[in-house]
Length: 293
Image 1 (cartoon, one colour):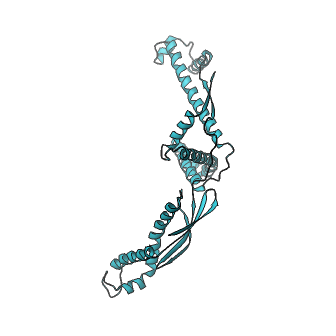
Image 2: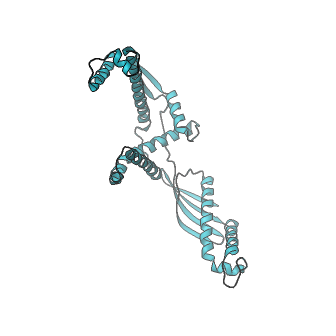
């Protein structure tokens, strides 16, 4: 098999593939044998028509079947031979098939080449969360106002299932700390991702972007339906939703590709757990600064 690779851009390759000899000849032989067993030829019982008649009457069928079977096989061999990591189905063109020759051109998207620098020692700032008494007081005052009660006291706390006002305050403080910690973790993740993607100019594979956008759109439509939005309204807003989602999908694909590039450099398996493992690696190797609120 011959395979010539042409780089069209950072994420697209063109392969010109040619295979000849017994590979093609044997594929035709296998196909004609299958056809001969089932072919209906006037004057002959199925499976008993002479081979030359079968080939004459079913040449077009055999030609199409050889293409359907042989092109995927040869294409995959070419990817393996040239070590090309295709991320979507190829565009096949310029197909030529003879009894001992098959050639075609395949245009395929690949994972773009991304050079990620300075991903170790990323500066990250962590602020120890704290909750002041005034914050708890504001929450309690809000509860007092919404429930239209005279006082926030032990009796009120017991009505909510807590033995005392002191214990209610402690629970509210713990909940507030968790909320602040979660918000800060999201902020730290954004710091890290912004650092990794700053200044990157990557042509994103549109197949990945489209797939991600459709997945996000599907989930958004489900969420809206669960909130009681009528189906007709969701359909009416679909184009606007897709437009709104597209930049988010592009961002998520870019982040995934950057993390994949780091994974390959650090010999982290690119599997279903890759994103989590790379983020662990980046956090472990970050330059942390701890502050007190």
